[in-house]
Length: 251
Picture 1 (cartoon, rainbow, N blue to C red):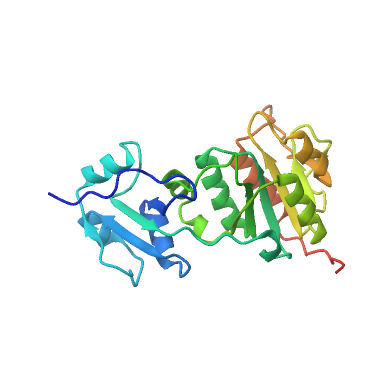
Picture 2 (picture 1 turned 180 degrees about the vertical axis):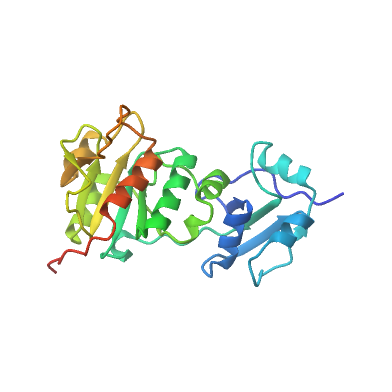
């Protein structure tokens, strides 16, 4: 009988990160900032693993053990990793030359994982969210991110409005994305250092968040549907502002 990994997934900041799926596990194993604690996998999954220098001996298990551990809906692809959470930088430690994505109470781990992928694809320098009203670092989030969470600094703040004011003090222009805004983000000339703020689907940006933004912008959507899933909206917004030369910031 094959050994079964622990069953209970830890809550946020209560234990190791649970990472499953081929791409997320490979990316975590390649990340020198990750401290790997345990690795379980089927023989086939471990044979497919492309990451080099695995820092410990993996435990070979039966796929049914992973199903019991993660649930039958988890697309684990036969592999599961436990690792210490990555260190979280402060706002004053992130790059001030790029674009930062800020999330206002977006809690769906699938959406946040997809936003991680967009941030990595378009070179966003950090992803910022609140410590409360945000998804825990779950296996669902890491799977949806498909390895991108290893490349984008993840900053959790206590108060979002104060965090936006702090970003302003570092020279960031804070742009809120809102469907009813008069100005379209395409062609608005926004340039780094830039903070793009996205609100939860349905609720949008909270009042104080909206009031703290330097400007509000919408996506220019020519079709009959004028709203998108927040992760898709994030990708389009990052595409709209890509390639701009950084603004000169007074120090």
